[in-house]
Every structure is written in structure tokens, then in C-alpha cells.
Image 1 (cartoon, rainbow, N blue to C red):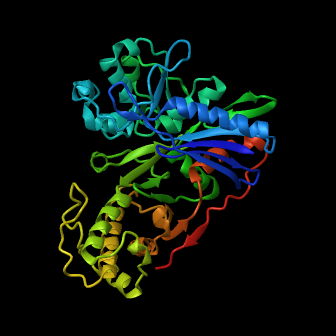
Image 2 (cartoon, rainbow, N blue to C red; image 1 turned 180 degrees about the horizontal axis):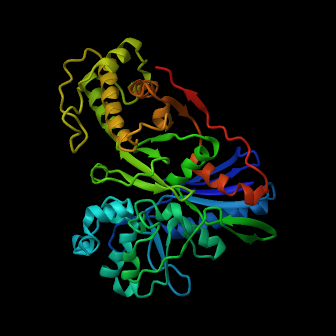
Image 3 (cartoon, one colour; image 1 turned 180 degrees about the vertical axis):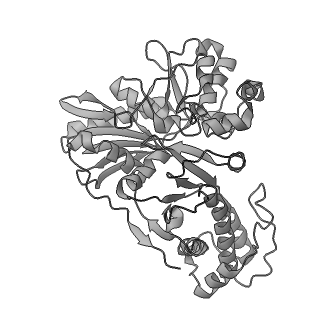
Length: 448
């Protein structure tokens, strides 16, 4: 088996994949958060470490499975800082923690201004979400701790370090809006050296170290950023350019085949770049799609007297879809999305919940198309689009997307645990020393 720890902000999972890359076991945990020295909520790293080590020991001692390889996928924008003895110096700070204004005074100006710095690093100015700037925050606000930092590791590499004892870095973790990587020169940005920040040189994603678990010898990987990991099954299974639309609370539009630098306009519209396992930029944009959907569905429920999940019973109307696709103007959000995401357009023009929900979804798809076109180059490639996540099961959403993209083939893709599967694929050669089996992406073409 290949064992994967998939560490999300909410759910922490241990998964086992067999030689056919079929999921054979999944265990899930949620842990109460703790607080950092400022009282801000963060993951309790001690609980996580204990659970991870005990879970592997339990699996091996049970004797039912032989763990040939182990790898890790975790959320990004988080670092752990080690002292000279390899001991952690800080909590794993929450990337939602506010960045004090004075930390960045004069910083961007030193490196050609915020727009040029953001373009070079493919990182919109996002405060603590730019994980590299967390180190600058420590230097300015916790100088005693900064002086003791021997090495800073991104979170996937830290959880790998817990098992291997090896400090490492890899491209997907560096490339996820960290403000650390200079995409022009394809190396760490010079500001890190200027500030005396020590980070390991990046290694290839399939790097692994042999680790002994009792009598079991396992090839243990160095981890991967979760968004980049979710792309791996598609990069391995599809032999032509594509766009992946990963839907949920956030909708992420990823184009691994657009190598053009980010423009100022794209940065202002919340576009960024991830980095693939092939060390190529993945031009991406995002939309708060799931949240906007939920708060406006709640408004519809209040108006029509319907219950929370009533929208799931709405049947896609061929006539309504056809009319909406031929209609140019919006109803919801026609002047932009309000700060609270709730539109103030009156609902009196709709006779039924179904009518209003069809219009809401059409307007949300129009917003999605604006985000999608931020990552499509002028030649309008690629021609294939894959929709995954929660909205892939919303027929109205997928039909409207296909209708808004008449020159493309649109597919839904149902891959359970795509992030963990990507981390397993990376370790497949090390585990089994053979070629990858066929990867089932669960594709279904949407015909509008």
C-alpha cells in the first residue's frame, strides 16, 4: 500500500491506496484548534503529530497492510520554523492572521513596487497568505525567535520531516502565492537573502527517503501542496492541454498550460500562479462561488418559504436554460458582487423558487466565466475543461458552463480524494517500481 496523510484546515485524513491506485482505507479526524501567543486560532501541531505517528504505528503493528511508501499533502501558506537542534520554535501560524501594516513599510518599494513584485512572484499582496512574508513578520515582531531560526519549512515538508528527519523544500509549496519564488529567474527571490532568511534548496516532488517503521521499510516522500496535488491525476492521465475548475466554497480555475506572465490587471482581479510537479506555472484565478451561492440561496429560501436544501430538488429546465444562454443581461450581481455577497435585486419578478434559482445560477456562471477567462490566453486554448468538486454534481451549473463555452468540450470529473491520489501517484514508482496503471478520472461529457 501507499499511505497518504492529507491534512486540510478542517479534516485530517489517513488514506491507503493499493497497487491499482484504488482507495482501500480512509480514516478521518478533526482536532480542536489551539491559540498562538497573540490569541489567534491555529492548528494544534502536537495533537496532529501524535495522531500521525500513532496511526502509522497502528497500521504496521496490525500486520494487515505493508506500507511500501508514505507521502503527505497539506494546505499551503503555512510554515514551521526549526532551531539548530531541529526543534520547532513557533506554532503553525494561521494564514488568516492579520498582517500588521508596519511590517511591510517600505518593503514593496525596495523591490520595484507592489505590482511588479507581485507579478514576479505571481503572488497578489495577501498579507499572511503570502507565507514568505510570515518570516518577515517574525523578524520584525519576534526578533528573539527570528535569531534562533535555523531553517523554515513549508507545512508539507514539516510533516514529512517528522518521519524522515530531513529538511527539504519543493516547488509546489514554494509556488503557491508565497512571495518567495521569482518566476522570471526561476529561483528564490533575492529578498530572502537580503533579509537573512534560510530555506532549503527545492527538490523534485518524487524525492523520497527510506524510513524504518519497526521492521517495515518505507519510501517516504517530501510532501506536496494540496491544490497542486489535485492536478496530478489530470496531468498524468490527460495527454493534451486542459483547464481544471475545482469547485467548492472557493472555485479555483487552473490552467497548467498558460505560461504567459501575470499582468497587472490579472493580479488586481485576484489571479495568481501555482507551480506544478513539472516546475511549470499553473495560472489560476478564484471566485468565492460556493459562499456566494449559499448566502443567496438562503435569501431565496426566506423569500419563498422554502427549506435549506430545497435548491437540490430543482430540476434543470431545458427551456429556462436556453433562454438564459440567449439572454445577455444579468439579474443578480449586474453591478458587481456586493461586499456581503448578498444581492439587493428585488425578487418580486420571480413567480417560483425554480425561476429565481435558474437566474441565480446563470449569473454565478457568468461570474465564473469572467474568472475563467483570466487564465485563458488570447488563442482561447485549451479546448477541454474539467469540472470537479461539489458543483460538478449540480446539473444546472454544469449545463450552463457548457453552454457558455460552445467551442470547448466540458466534462465533469468525479475523483474522490484527488489531492491524496495525486500524492500517491508521485510515490508510485518508489513503491512498486513499475509504470502507473490507468487512472480513472470519472469523466462525463456535458452536452448542452
